[in-house]
Image 1 (tube, rainbow, N blue to C red):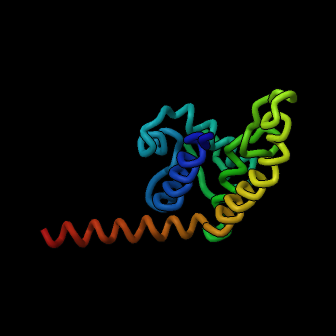
Image 2 (tube, rainbow, N blue to C red):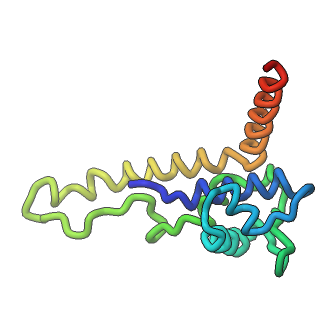
Length: 152
């Protein structure tokens, strides 16, 4: 099981929107250059974030902006916007375990509740981290980089 890169790319995009919205026109081409991805991939993510009510996108080359403050956008919001979960479940189960096998016959009873608990714990943690938290960490790293450059 692996969460696709859409989630981390979406967080990257949102950080860029927050970091550069005052100084640059934050377009899909601009974002694609930061992510080092095809602008089509970025446009698709922007549409998903817009549909989720996280961003607004001005037509043409107007750029993107967040709809609400970064402190109100959680990583869970971003995750839910861009990751398509089959039936809302993080873990996919193999289709037809053998009912004649004692393991196959009982695998759902053994794992279903545990996997639901794991998913809820992950979602809870994602819900506790805001875009503002990640933005603050990014700015701290940039300040540290600048300080190190000055010392050289």
